[in-house]
Image 1 (cartoon, one colour):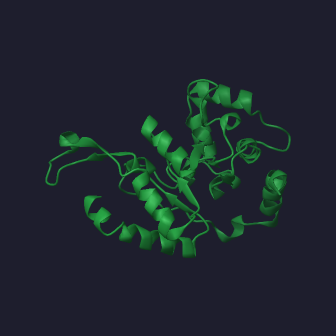
Image 2 (spheres, rainbow, N blue to C red):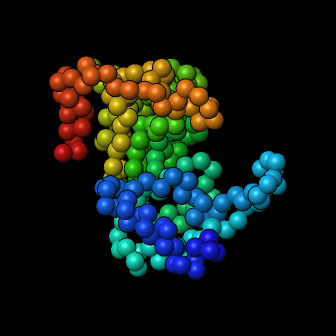
Image 3 (cartoon, rainbow, N blue to C red):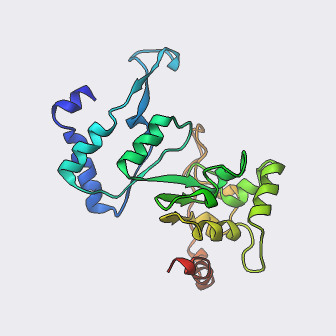
Length: 227
């Protein structure tokens, strides 16, 4: 960061400018590092010698805004989040992330429950690092299963995982992102990625006969309240 300050964050500005040219929205993973990050000295045999450092904060984002103007950014603020991270996301005005599957631990104040969303967030039923919704439910603790089915019961038209998708779509979230595995009602064998596992990930592919007119109709039925 000290080096990048000297050239006014030129590398970041080039990268974000290019991303804006080719994407409608850019998601920045591990956004918390702009508030605070864990620094490990080069050559350390493990991470135990590391220390937490204060991030660059709004100094960086103010410079980005002066040069590039407004950029649509999703701030991935998942995991252990400090007050500094919460404050930084608020100060930037960026939309943060909510993951439906994370809503069923704790109590009704859980920020990942859709009734607790504000409008400036992006809701995922699950991300690339989560199990599919069906896979998650089948392996979830019984307390989470009971809570989820009580809050979002299945109906004649919306069986699991579509009852979860419908609740996400009907939330206040500015944007809702649904993995295709959930629309296809696939289980854990269609999971995209298991963090920390070095092999066997990112192998999921959609078979040509999966994208049917019936699926398109179901998606339209589920999302029509957003139109």
